[in-house]
Image (tube, rainbow, N blue to C red):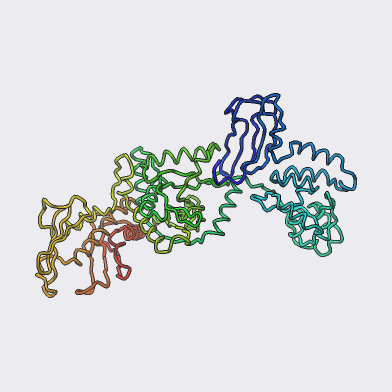
Length: 597
């Protein structure tokens, strides 16, 4: 049921002892750490013996039953099995024949029988315990999920003179500050059971312990197989991986606009689906993040398989959407929705939860701003997503394993991810359907506006086809031109800098592009928030007048009657969304303000 399986629980015997079964007929259901799976008969025959009761826990390779001919001798099969086929009968007989000294006043034999049947133990451990007359409930377990293994029985026997006590009794004694050696045992072979500790606490011998604060257990909830697996894997991740988390605040407007456009067009594609598309683009661009750390190797995986964490009745499941980078957003939605429905219905398979190369967990719906997600080993990274705040921003929390990724690599991945998730046009292109995103402050629109604002010379037959492809020519002196898909634009340095002063300088073009980008971004954010704004004028002032820029001031003059608070939000969002503004060096001081026309 998967290479990562540690244990299985027999949750149901579909066939009963004595039933005839056909080849490939389902005879039992076994739940692994990830999902429940059917166990089929390998050939036709009769289910002669069931070796593990419903609820019994076994390890991979342990037998659970015998299918053979109706009259076939079972001795050859029994000889191969490391398990007593008469466990229940043997334990019942032992309990029935126990004398007064063994049962004790508190009915210790009945309690022991119950404990024995519920103790998780390997077949080898059970056989060793029977041979040595050891009560399994008294043995400290060291195996997976509290399973008693044969070495545990050996260690118990080696302890010899130590006080015998069940794990429950030891925990109760430790909790209450009681010396277990002072407690009168009533269990088999002089074992202290939990009732003995309770009786001790009620006696005068307890002294001052009775005055301690009590903790009454309202309800004890046993962890499911899935919850035990989660606990083990997260514990492993915490112990082994070196977790470092980087936070990045982005404008979620592009994701929301694209998801809204899909809804308007009647196309399947939610906020989560659009988010996964952006994540897959970033993973494809940074293969070191789309990777596993196994056997001391950093293994870069070709397929981009993204797991999406789901909360189902208090338990965590992470179904994996395979090859996300190669899918349209409609396809991502179809697979993710089908998997989520299967998980909620309990009909998911091991395959639904396997093969992940990266994980996304979103606590935004629960009102969480940011958090430190725990890596799902052997993956090397996980993305946590917070809520979309009132100003339209959200926080991305990228946790990575510092054993294989350094901070700079992680920061570059997060930067690419932020760029992808704020590019409405790029996200919309991941749909098969044509979407009208509308109002997006795209790089194409910014480049077009910058060209219109600059000195356009003429269209060229040799103009590049790609809007982001620029050809720059400088024939002589300090002037020249750059050719774009929209035409040619001249540039020249001022006369006092050695140029002819016949066109804007490259710095002037930069300031114009900044003003154009901010203006378009304001327009887009205002449209998204239903804030009416008429004409927009951007006054951009760079200083000093000559030499490298050290500061830029932008005053956005807006023709509007909207409230100041609404305009503050729009301008703040526009500043975050503007590509040109984000591309400027952090060493350059840029101040953006607004006023009314």
